[in-house]
Image (tube, rainbow, N blue to C red; front, side, top):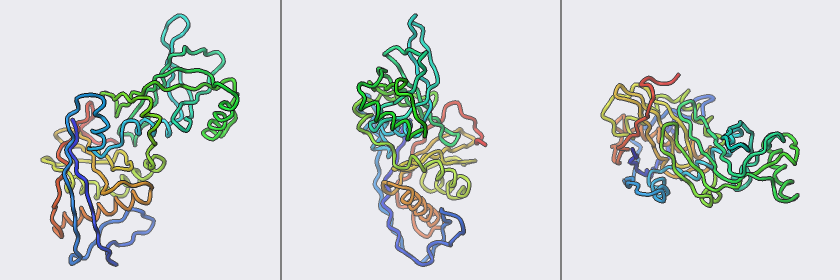
Length: 321
């Protein structure tokens, strides 16, 4: 089920009484002078039906979500272990846990035991748990081989040393030449095939290194804001019993919503793309302020709410601990 979302253009006029300072808190609770004006402009964007794999780029753009290639690059950048699957000499499939680093274009760099002689055709499966609520994953299909020349070996050795802080035996280094990538949002979901060129040309998300800490802060200290987001920015016809933020990226964030009717994920976009931690926190605070003002009837909800939710398969109707 696809999400229908909207882009927010948010103009908040400055006010000395905008927010009440809270010690040791980077996310603020909204407080506003009712006489201060506020304006909100928005335009509706609906996700079109997908008819082929090539339409996933259009789908990602219209739903304010990173492209699958970007998600795969982010997973690979944030992870350091995976499962390498290959064929043994007698034709049996074999999967072994491996550590890996990635080169500048996302090429996996592995350090393998001399006892393992992988078949050229191999697959590297990598998972990234997001705050205990979702596990996006990617599987890289390609050809595994030793680096071609001494210059490449030196560069890859430096990549490994930067990732793990240790030297590596150069004759144990392998690289996986990426043919294509299967990107999945979670278990029990359909995947999207990403072409090698799209994967290599994509950039990992700029918030990847701070997203988990930001989400944990919000889930620990800003539950009231998250509930308010559900009520203000999402068009719901049921009562939310619990909600948590799953993850945040440059274009917005995902919420997990529990209700007596079921469990759903919903995507809420930022007013504009963010590029760093400061921008993400500023956008969240601005959206919190606006949601509070709408809830208090200081300004109208003059925008199109998120209409469609994605039902979570196989999840409990109770929130996670």
